[in-house]
Length: 131
Image 1 (cartoon, rainbow, N blue to C red):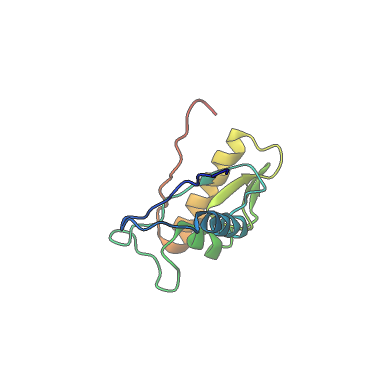
Image 2: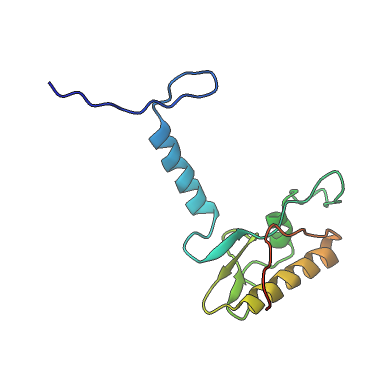
């Protein structure tokens, strides 16, 4: 008789979860709907505002992506760099973007959001080297 072993997954309470595969598929499907996974990017570029020190307008969700979106910047391009149409906190390489294109677009987004809402976006990315 052949017996197959299956890995056991447990949560903090110690109960086995039989839905790990289903959860992973659901998570990936959500990411595919809400993030530009089809284009190269560095992921989220800016941290979400800190509600204890940043004054985000009450009609705008307290997220960098929402501020960028409400500033009208989705699809804005500098060279080959573009603010994603799917998630505004992702800057993507739409084709041939240089590091300078990305950094110029980052600066444009920072400046526009600050001018429009008075919020200073803080970068999640680290810039290395000369550009």
